[in-house]
Image (cartoon, one colour):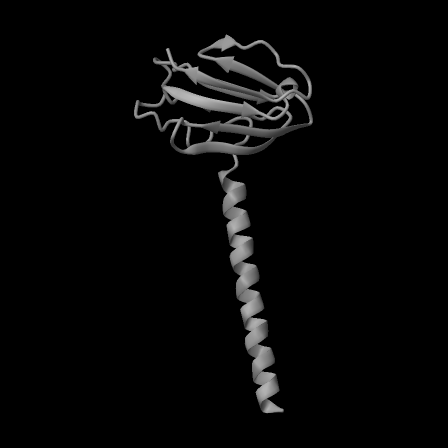
Length: 136
């Protein structure tokens, strides 16, 4: 009987540890998600100083969600890091300053895209769109 209680206690402690790890990872992922009023952590990775009041930097690409939920939006450095691969919410905006970026929009009609400060033509609703943006 004592061995069964010990096994049950070990199992319970293991379950608590697993739940703490899952909760901690979820919290960290939530804290890394950009909000509409701030840039994602990956934005200034271009190696140049981030924009100050005297030097406003124009992002290579700016993507803003204009509907309730924008399906999968993927932004990556060609042959390199994936900067974003997730859904976006209404009003959420991301900016990236890398010299060259590959962008894939699952539904091009749900987002507003600006390339080097110039608005890109709105895509068709429900149409997948993939393109490369190069900085000025």
